Image (tube, rainbow, N blue to C red; front, side):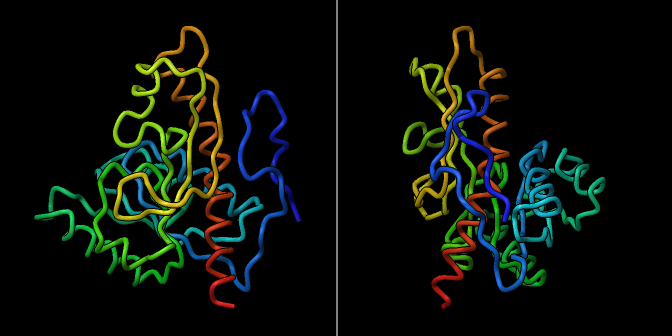
Amino acid sequence: MPEFADPSDPALGFQWPLSQAWPCFDRPLRLGVMASGAGSNFEALVRACRQGPLDAELALLVVNNPHCGAQVRARRLDVPWQLHDHRQHGSRAELDGALVRTFGEARVDLVVMAGWMRIVTPVLIEAYPQRLVNIHPSLLPSFRGLDAVGQALAAGVTLSGCSAHLVTAEVDAGPILVQAAVPVLPGDDRRRLTERIQEQEHRILPLAVALAGLRLQQEAA
């Protein structure tokens, strides 16, 4: 079975858990992905599914912004997608109710928030307990919420990174699945630090999905 890239490579930062065999499942996980922006994490998941080592398939992408980059990527990658424009819903709970119905119809096992720039409600969280994964650009529990990279730069830290975690009602506070650390270099601004953090996000998010799937399999056993 393929193993995760060597975390001791100085060009890659490091992560927890360290290099390990990836889990396989009785059948590939069916993933629903939520994205609001460029969609680079969405594409990283597609690559991990199609080229290995993630034992999963992309069942559906949902976007909330018309013509966003994630939608363009879905077309290029031939992944089914739907638009749920949050502006067309009266409340966050109403939007989440529509998402629950959409993902239910697509028969997804796990839902991944891959740059979903909306706070989700218990409507979605309770429909997918322990099955809702988020990626956040900080080493949680530090710098929760909006503009985590800006918060890190303002605080003057020398180490930043990203975290993939299960979603709970408290924002960015759910159980952590995988983290990767990224040094803050002299002269870093939001753009440069964000780019290096995103490189790590693309590595850890597929592994976090695999670990979340493994938890589900173990609970069902």
